[in-house]
Amino acid sequence: MGKQLPPGQFETEKWPVLHEGDVYEFQEETWNFRLFGDVKKEITLSYKEVMNLPKTIATTDMHCVTTWSKFDTTFEGIAFREFLNLVEIEPDVKYVKIYGYLDGNRFGYSANLPIEPLLGDDALFVYRWKDKNHDWQEISPKHGYPLRFIPPASFYLWKGAKWASGIRFMKEDEAGYWEQRGYSMTANPFKEERFADTNFIFGKF
Image 1 (tube, helix red, strand yellow):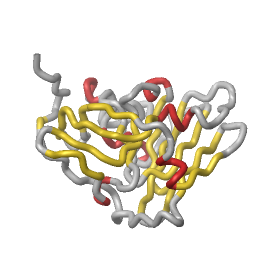
Image 2: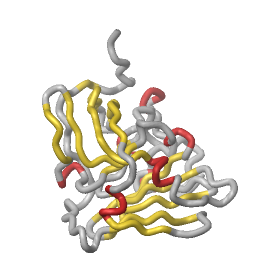
Image 3: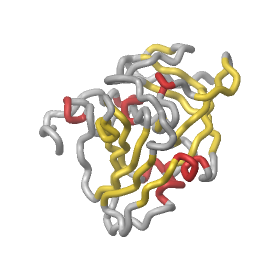
Image 4: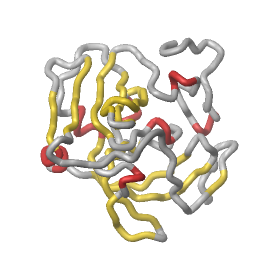
C-alpha cells in the first residue's frame, strides 16, 4: 500500500534546503539549550548534557508547505518527551514554542505546537539521518546542525526548527515566526492548513 500524499503536495527523494536568514555556525562552548516558560524551574543544558540524554531512532515523512513531501527518512535524535521529563511544568500547560537561531538571535525563529502530539517517537531533535539513498550521516549546517527539531508528519515542516535552541512551555497558544506572518496555527498537511483561518489575529487567536 502506497503512502498517502497530502493534497497539493508532490513527492521527492531529495531533501530541499529552505530556511530564513543565515546558516548558524555552531560553537560548542557558547551553545546551550534552554527549557523555560511556565515551569517551576528553568533549566539550561550544555551541548554535552543534551547529547547525553536518551536517544531515539524513528522513520518519518516530511511535508513542506512549499509543496514537497519526502517519505521515509530515518532520524536519530532526542525525543521531545526527554526534555519534558526534565522540567516540572505548571498546571494547564498545553502548548510549547520551539526556538531556533535566526541571524544570530538564538530565539529569532519559533514554532508553536500543542504538547500532546509530541509525546511519541516521531517528535525528535535530530542530529543525524539516513534514507534509502544515503547511509547514516550528521545533518549538515544548512539542515540545522547541531540540532534540528523535526515535527510529526501530521504537521507541515515549518513547525520544526533548525539550529534548535530551546523550548518554552505555555498555558495558552501563541503564534510563532511564520504564524505571525499569516500561516496556519495548526498546520495539518492532510487538511491543507497552510494559511491562517479568517479568525486569525496577528500574534494570537
